[in-house]
Length: 325
Image 1 (cartoon, rainbow, N blue to C red):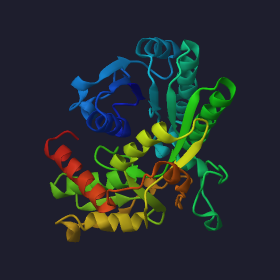
Image 2 (image 1 turned 90 degrees about the vertical axis):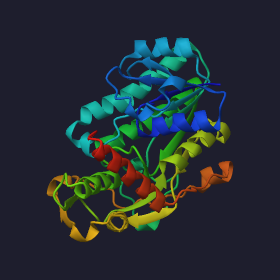
Image 3 (image 1 turned 60 degrees about the vertical axis):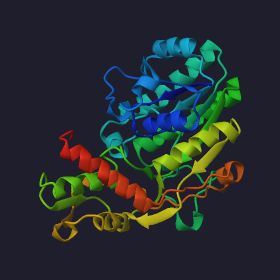
Image 4 (image 1 turned 135 degrees about the horizontal axis):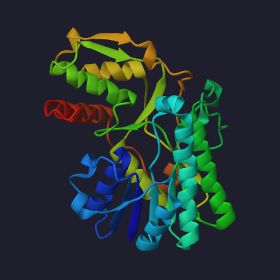
């Protein structure tokens, strides 16, 4: 099959491409990248995939790519995915995620191809959920409280509309927190791991900066996530939406304590709250009900969060050691 991944140079996209190449050989993997996209995440597989220059904000580039590739599966992962950055650049976030998704779906409609399309929404669409509504299922009311979350509601609803109006085979995922090596440094556990790696190698004072440590998250490894995405397009019904998430729930403080326990310099580190890292509104309680997806696919997480944190810390240790960051 011909498989097209938007955001292939990113965190999840690169892991997904690796997973398909390693576990489902015989498929052709294509990716859309911007001309300025860093390619370090795909350096090990770049010779095994085909890349196209394009941009979600340029409909004509997407039409050209769809006409040439004619994909049978599209994984739409490209997005402005940083919640904090969305507060400082809300219009860019909305434009990239909503208008960009509209352009992608329009390109598929205009070219009259008929792929299965995974549109990656987010658990952030649920916003701050009351304890009485936990765990969060697909029927939980959408209450977005960041520009990023608003953009993901728009993306989510566009995918549903294109299924209803044009019968495009869109399937939506609302993925909860997922992490692992290559995770962007702006995300909380990766941000902590990078600071720890710098402190260990004497490139940062032994002060680890944090934001809100009381938020509760349910964590999943990215390598389990991409397996779930493959099952999503293989077994799930178009037009539907599915929660996907891990089974390890803890506060951010508990996560930080677990990460610090993996370092030989943990007793030398002072943890300080930085007011600049506190969001205007924080979603502090995310516990998913993934039973709808799990019953259909049989998927369940297999990688412990301890392994996730260890692999992420090792990734940043190497990046810092070799001066890549």
